[in-house]
Image (cartoon, rainbow, N blue to C red; front, side, top):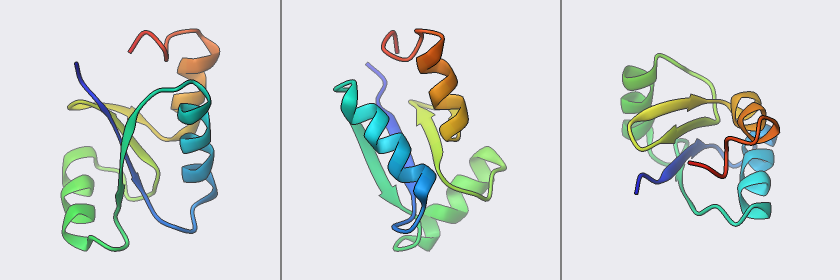
Length: 81
């Protein structure tokens, strides 16, 4: 089963909202603080083309940011992941 990975920074409000949404649905995730891990941030940018956080991945598939995650939830598709 693919896991959800959140690339975040400690001060990001949308990162907090994404974590709260996943936690409220009991969906496990792995958090990667890109501020503390600049080499991972560079990998994230190269892989996704996105320079802002959160970047939310499901396995190797890009979900997007918080808005995309919320949209999946609103459409009833998030828990199906």
